Length: 120
Image 1 (cartoon, rainbow, N blue to C red):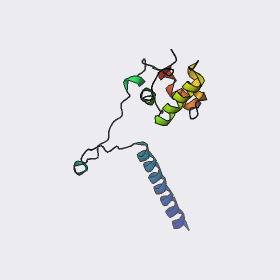
Image 2: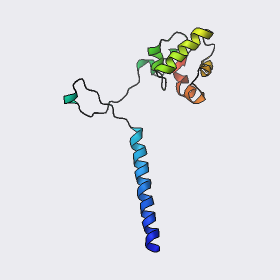
Image 3: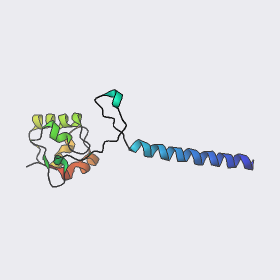
Image 4: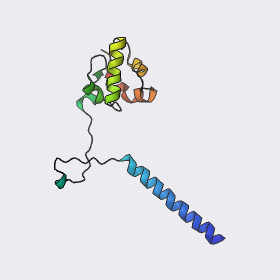
């Protein structure tokens, strides 16, 4: 019985290690970029923030186009288009917090972008 308990503990420890290791692996992404598939190499591409997302340079959410909005952390093409659609339908944002009225932008996403956006 003691051997079974020890074996179960060892298996549990191994599975925990595999789970933790795989979750760490999933957090990093390797992007393969090659124009010629025969010469393809696996090199991670390090993402650097665009000028639009530098602290101190803010994106005006009342005038920004989709490309500028996509430069914001966590804002992809779909959300960028929703922001523009909301703005066209409802007029200019009166405050940066109003962007949370756009479907898909809640308090968490607002917290991630609020230092990068402005309304004037």
